[in-house]
Amino acid sequence: MGLFTHGPGQIFSKQEINTLADLRGKKIRLGGGIQQEVGERLGVTPVAAPGPKVYELMQQGIVDGVFMPAASEKDFRLAEVAPNLTLLPGGLYLGSFSIIANEEFLDKLSPKDRQAIMDVSGARLSALAGKAWDQSDNNGIIAAQQNHVAIKQVGDDSPIAKEYWKLTAGMDKKWIDSVSDLNVNAAEALKTFREKAQAYQSKQNNTAAR
Image (tube, rainbow, N blue to C red; front, side, top):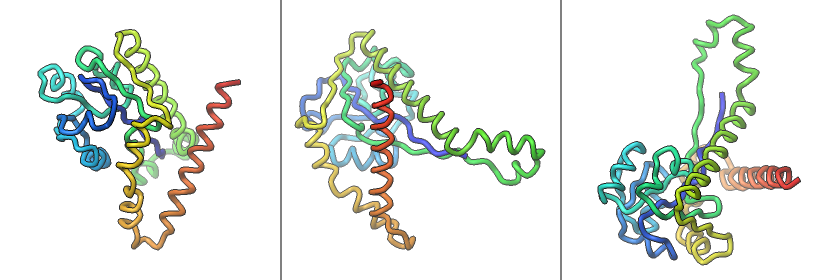
């Protein structure tokens, strides 16, 4: 019915992050999937816990930081326990999600009701979800500003960004190799996907600027 990602994962921390080496050895709450790989490359000590537990973990000093979307600033009141927020261009990672409807359920609906659901699904539902995440991230950053959190906005050409790209080099190849049995040109598919995403982002930014 729809595909979308959450907002870019960012760094909430007790300590100011001036270089990614500042994270090495630190206890960081991580989710699963790509976060684990990123955490390993950054040299952090991973701590597994559900999102709603982050405030408690930070408050009790069990972790030194957490990788989560900027929306979490407001959702989990992180300004009270994490005085620093580091925003990387594109973030550390993105989590992808899908919304699925059971075919048997759809078949039980009247043609009118089924069509009504399909009319608001696909690209429309995906765009709606993406817009909601974008707004939530913006709200999180506003909350951080209002609560006097130290926000470090990392630029594309900054040492931290360059260091991150270097540390995460090769992750694409690992994924491409993992789907080599699907008879699909995964490298070309990934390249096309990124070009489309960047073009969409640029279009959105230009629209906002006007």
